[in-house]
Image 1 (cartoon, rainbow, N blue to C red):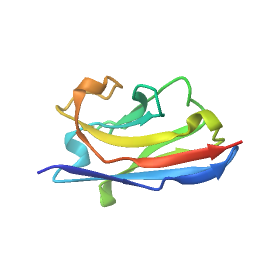
Image 2: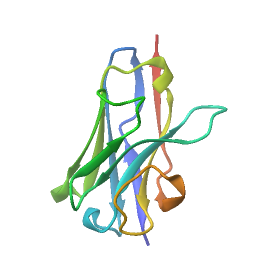
Image 3: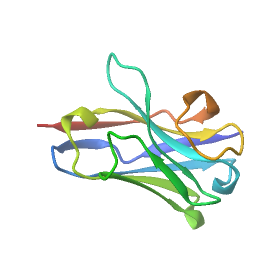
Length: 125
């Protein structure tokens, strides 16, 4: 059974940084692309970034380009999301997910079927 676990959320001031971690169990990073999504109160879940571990290809939403970096540690079977220059509008629950099939990563939510429970990120002004 595949499970996805996120960690690393917290509360920071605007301009600060956080690093989120995501470790899938029952699934090797080389089997599936991994994505980060977020959902703010009253808003739809949106894609933030994704990574195809087998190729290293990455993709970012325009709202986070230049500020967030997704990376992988194969030895730890872990994907990270380094978030710098955080803004209050980045406040959300952040979810990590694995794609249902070995696609090249994209941020189409319906292609992800293994989800973590989320980690809260709060950025104050």
